[in-house]
Image 1 (cartoon, rainbow, N blue to C red):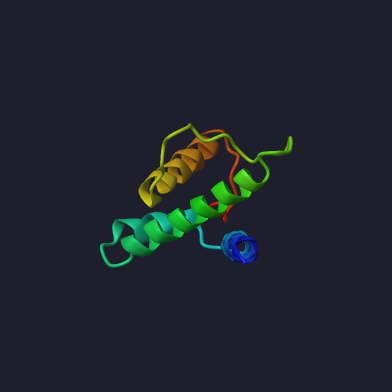
Image 2 (tube, rainbow, N blue to C red; image 1 turned 90 degrees about the horizontal axis):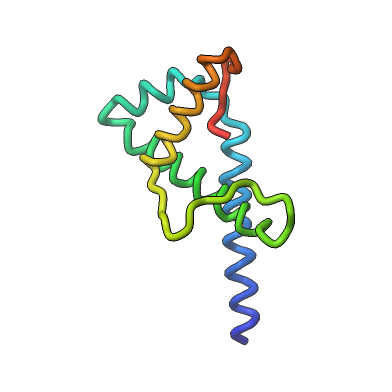
Length: 110
């Protein structure tokens, strides 16, 4: 019985992560709009939640691949990231790419 519940929880968690990742991949919000939403007090919380969910999905996917050679990224050990942290990483990456001309009109967070 315990093994069945464990398998069910893993299946539900992976399904949730895949839905988050699929939503992120289909996002066509321009980066400038994301930055404006983040500045606005009424929409800031949605941006932070979005990036937290996106980061969690990527972390779960990377953890699932950790036994193979195709891991997505190697996060630092014993460190937890918040939605603010993931937003900051996105913003830094966006401006780094823009500095070198490696961006498009639509640069989704993934």
